[in-house]
Length: 214
Image 1 (cartoon, helix red, strand yellow):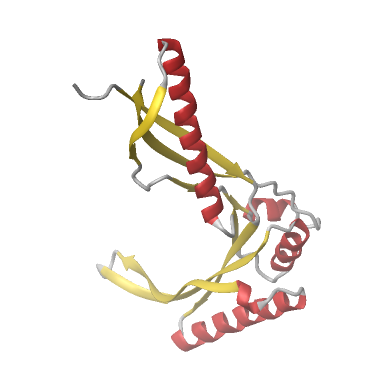
Image 2 (cartoon, one colour; image 1 turned 60 degrees about the horizontal axis):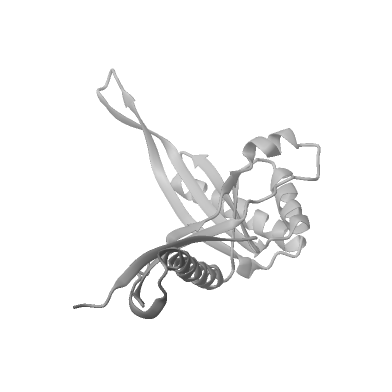
């Protein structure tokens, strides 16, 4: 006769305050000449980078997420074909910094004072995601054990040795909300403060444990 056993799945979600901020913006230029479009785009991005350096943002904090120059065409009903209009150049840049409200405001105000208001989004996260993953897994194991102990106590038996652990190494992805700043920046044109209070970063884990019942 096989050993009596109980299988319990523990699920837990860990929340941590984000310690990292990513400010993303898009520089965009239009021109009928490819070379001129590229030139204007590079000049604008260089100007923004120089302004960021003025407020003590290290260039190593900047990464290009996407760079693209494409032709924009529209369909001509009379000619029954697409007609070239212009080139559209886009340079998407991420600025990764500490979650420092004063520093975030300096960057947003700098971008907001530019001759154009680029599309800006902000997301928050963790520098070391391993910490939240390990903590969520510990919580899931503790939850499984606690529930197992409650059940066997009600049954008048005791937990024995662990017989099996089922863990698929796939937690529910780290969740951090992103914020679109364009609307708030338009409202705050005359202000120097952007009141952004990020939600906690979350991560969920699940683990199933089988115990012997004594």
